[in-house]
Length: 119
Image (tube, rainbow, N blue to C red):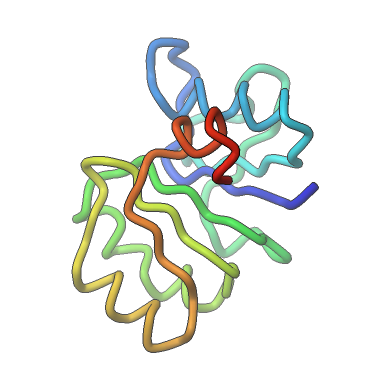
C-alpha cells in the first residue's frame, strides 16, 4: 500500500485525523504523521514538519487554510501524487499552486473515501 502523510495529526480519539490514522493503518497503508507538538500518536512516530518527509504518495490535510498556506512551499517540495483537503482545510491558493505542479487535489473526506473504496 501507499505512504500517506497526515498534516494535522491529533492524539485525540474524537478528532477526524485520529480516526483517519486508525482506518489508514487498518486498510494497510503506511502512515507518516506531522504534528510539531507530539513525539508519537498511538505508537506511530510524529515529525515536526513536512520537510522531514520524502516519498509520500498522498498527503491528507487536517489543518485550517491559514496553516495549510504556511506549508505550501514544503508541500511543493514534497511533491505528493495527491493532496486531500478534508472539510475545513480547503484553500483556493493551495489548490491552484498544486494544480500548476500537476499534483492531484481532492476536496473530500479521507474517512468517507476509505469507507467507500474511493481512496
